[in-house]
Image 1 (cartoon, rainbow, N blue to C red):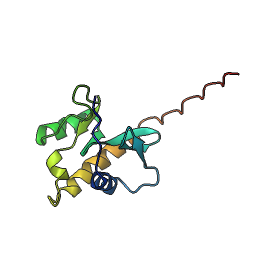
Image 2 (cartoon, rainbow, N blue to C red):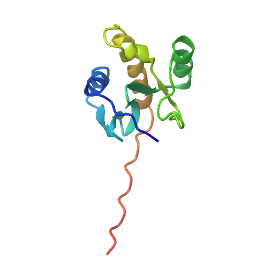
Image 3 (cartoon, rainbow, N blue to C red):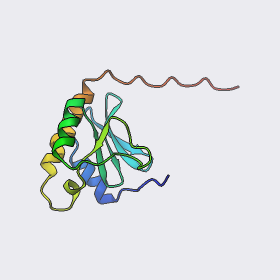
Image 4 (cartoon, helix red, strand yellow):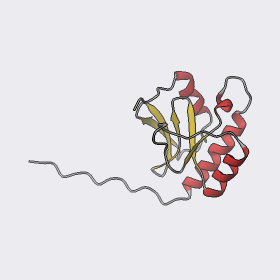
Length: 126
C-alpha cells in the first residue's frame, strides 16, 4: 500500500481549517497529519484529502449534498470518516469556509465522545 505524501501547502491548508481551540492537537501520522481532541481524531490529512469524523446524520447530509470521497487508502478506507470534496481544496476556489464548517462539526461531534484513555505502558523486560 502506497501512502500518499501531502505537500507543505497541503499541510498548511489542513492547519488553516482546524478550529483554534486550545484542546486541538495536530500531529504527524504515517507521513500525513491528524487533528485530535481528548485523544480522539476528528480530522485527518491523507495526501491532499481532508477527512472528517461526523455523526451519522451529518455524514449522511454531507454525502447527499456534496461529492465526497473515501478517506484513507483506496483498498481500505477508514470507517466512520468521509473525505471532503477535493474541489474544496483547489487553490483559490473560495470554499475554505465550507471546509471549516464541516471540520468544526467533526470537532464538536468528537469532543462530545468519551476521552480516549492513554495506552498502558508495557512493563520493561529485564
